[in-house]
Amino acid sequence: DVKVTQSSRYLVKRTGEKVFLECVQDMDHENMFWYRQDPGLGLRLIYFSYDVKMKEKGDIPEGYSVSREKKERFSLILESASTNQTSMYLCASSLDGNQETQYFGPGTRLLVL
Amino acid sequence: AQSVSQHNHHVILSEAASLELGCNYSYGGTVNLFWYVQYPGQHLQLLLKYFSGDPLVKGIKGFEAEFIKSKFSFNLRKPSVQWSDTAEYFCAVILGSARQLTFGSGTQLTVLP
Image (cartoon, rainbow over all chains, first blue to last red; front, side):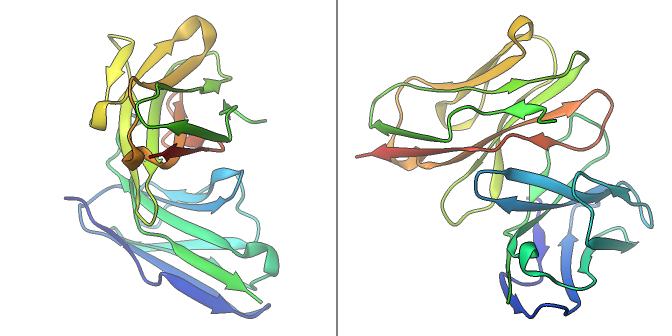
């Protein structure tokens, strides 16, 4: 079974703090993705990566950055957290190709005070 | 612009009722279509997917979906729902040769025992 793990299930941070969300997958997948999930808005893509050190902006990259130094690990960074970044963050991975299933982690619920 | 539309935000059914959840996309080229489900407290997981061939695809737990190209639709169906089908359902598409999914806003299904 594919396993995607996220470093924290719940996180509380203060406005202006730098926040790191980590995601690790164990199936040697090329593609990795970061989404945020908000009620009534579904999942919105923040960034994705299709190879080590490669990254592509998604639909809502503002206020976020990412890092992929190793194939199995994809980090999401909030440079200066703001209250409007309070959300559920989901990581996913997939094999390369546009017909592949994405496998999701359990999510990190982030509260920015 | 929203590429994927799910018009039903919340559906409430009694057990044994039939289910149809709508999904429409706005893209004239090739699409790969997916339905994902998120049960309470669980990871988002794949329900079914369509790439080509028979437009009626069957997924897990008795779900099926029909791709109607002329209507740009990929509706999810189940003839008889169970209480355990209570979950949030997301339609998603990969547009053309893209790697990333575009999600609809989701439909919360509540099945009453």
